[in-house]
Image (cartoon, rainbow, N blue to C red; front, side, top):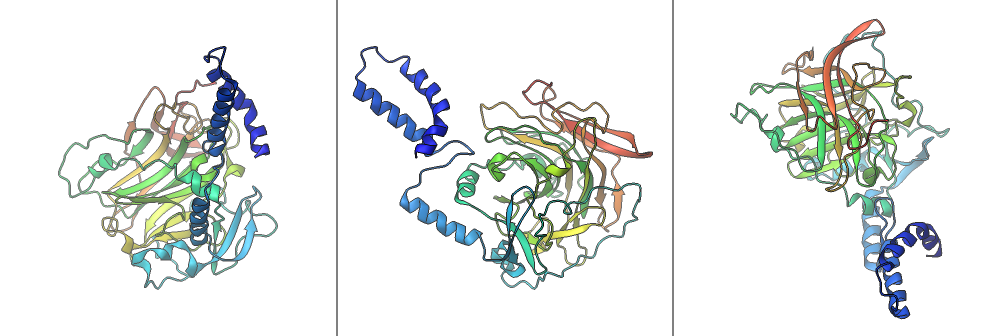
Length: 433
């Protein structure tokens, strides 16, 4: 407690001063002392996103139960260069198989998808996702998957995760809906600058992909800022990309993420059942700080795909030029996405609670048409109903607030090659430097 009081004193003193300034001069010293102790108690009981709560005994017992469910017994414990600790958990004990529809599964760690054939472009190479994150211990052994160790603070903090974006806007893309003009609605607090596939009632996509660079926009408290590839049918949505999210991760690092939404159920990474992880080297929440771009300097890129296996119907997450297989969403957990997707999006999204200024997006600057300075998604593709990969050359741009964020779709030259780019970003409600 003494340590907490010392940490609180600089901030607490300002709050005390604010409240005590308006007290009568002849205030009862005992009452003043009581008021100070009461304010100090509330400040120390919970200190925002990064703080700690003083738990009751029953709360502590309940958290311990949750931790036992979340933290499976590890076969090995490994650490990244950034200090993240991961448990190497037996493939068959991962959270995915807690899903009621996966109780009688026949999945195994050697599973491979049947993928569409692609011609590799040697001049269009991107960075490796996993080779530089592990310490001398290396990654997890075969037959296990890396899951980040959860703490009580993680559980308490993640109770403040915001609801997902409203799917009402995108539900208009459902092929069962005959509306000719989709309505534009997003949950309060979210702002986007995205490119999406044009509305067509006959859209049938078996996957999508992009190459993106990574930035580390500054966010505060319960804000987040992200870049994502998003595929959807009705109220079922899959997302993958990078994000800065102190509420989710407990730090301000740029990290990989996946998000799963099936009707009213949604979660990140391995926080709920559904996604089957198969890769021993790539954690779903790995730090990307070693690959963060600096405007005008070196840009690191990563290739991302979500692709449906035409044989099994499972949706696979693939990363890098080698299409490293990270894992998959099983077909049986879906109804709409059990067949195909009807909408695809690429670009940036931010969130801040009501009354809190909107954070920066992407590079934190408006795009200027230069891939060395802009946040981008390039080489965007979709897979049609037969699994053929098609380059996207026509999109619809959607920007919630052009005064804060922008998105541009244009062709740029890069290393003597020409690519179509979705350039996005902006300062939010912070002035550009």
